[in-house]
Length: 250
Ligand SMILES: Nc1ncnc2c1ncn2[C@@H]1O[C@H](COP(=O)(O)OP(=O)(O)OP(=O)(O)O)[C@@H](O)[C@H]1O
Image (cartoon, protein in one colour):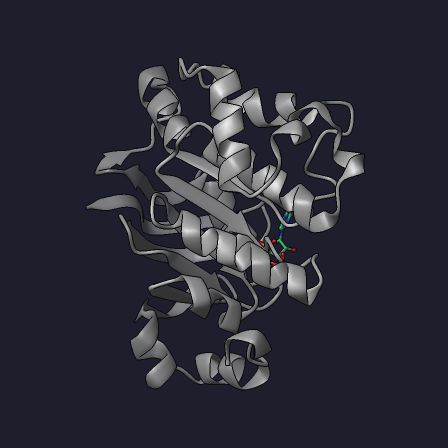
């Protein structure tokens, strides 16, 4: 089943240049999608559009075959319940004044999911490998890797179908990265990931599908294995050649 789709999407900030140019992609349930490109290629912009935080200038974004319609409140509620995001910097993405319980429980309330917050937060903490007593503590008491686990717990607590993750491990040291990648791999048994990264070797560990973005255009897309084995595009070959492999997974 196609969960999310971008159809011929074009986008630019203000009156500036096109940041995305005629971009089309599909996210199929159970097939994690990696979006890879160099800095400035438009990856974060693409995630913002997929999250409904910005609207295309031309083209369409659809959830399960229904076009995103910001004016349709019922649809937008379903849309927001379907997906959650995790961002790069675990230091700035968590509100330091809120307890971990309140941070993780926030989507339960804001999305009116009807879940029992206590039980759902406890389950989310257990799923990301944090102790139950973490709930009563504050973000500054945790390491970068633990904070990213808190951000992931917040993303899964409302049981979305899709998690969009933007450079989620790049602020972490290598051994912490490996553990967060293992956690995401485990979670992707129950949720489909969209993983944005400049690091193709990281994306290769988690994603079955790959899109290569160069200056706002998709230059190559398809099953990860096929692209890694036989990259068609010169830019893809350059990215592959310039990315060191994850040593722990060699
Ligand atoms: N709010 C904004 N206003 C104007 N231009 C922007 C804005 N955000 C991004 N851009 C521009 O859009 C282009 C794509 O940026 P984007 O952040 O999507 O790329 P990226 O691939 O995620 O880069 P990085 O890996 O460095 O985060 C860049 O040229 C950037 O300068």
